[in-house]
Image 1 (spheres, one colour):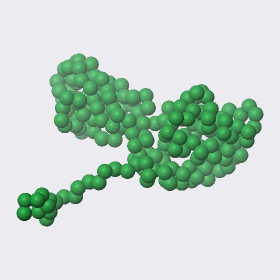
Image 2 (tube, helix red, strand yellow):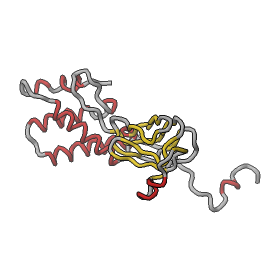
Image 3 (tube, one colour):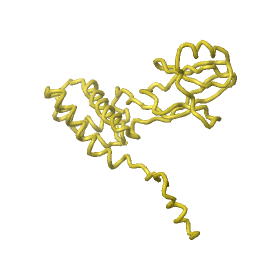
Image 4 (cartoon, one colour):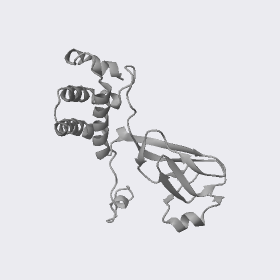
Length: 202
């Protein structure tokens, strides 16, 4: 996997001396992330794991949390928690038991009722890229967009319009994502009974 210095070294001969490249670099990475978010790409998905202590009603979300993809669930249960429907529900579940509802406020997830035992919440969440601040920081996305990010850096340094830069990075991401985010085929509903006919018993 590439590092920040690898991206910078490839274009440093075209960058004015003493240029602070990091603000532009992080903006470029964020533009890639926004487009990946639009595509619901696996590159911006994270595995949720939030520990809740016994007799507690809240837990801290990951530092790179950008929003839930699906409803979270207790690791030992087979059903998801539901979003808390209203204020009355929250007021009616002030004790501790087995959580039924959840609410996300900022970087904290709250449970109603609170949990009477230590639990772990699992699920999936949208993850934002970590800020790059050092030459040895690892570039995100496994080098897929390093060339595009280099081009964006040069365009920004030259003062190109942000709308043009955004259009370029979106185009580059759009050309890659269909080939990296492929999912297994899903079986359609068998309303005509074809599955039964094809099981070799006829």
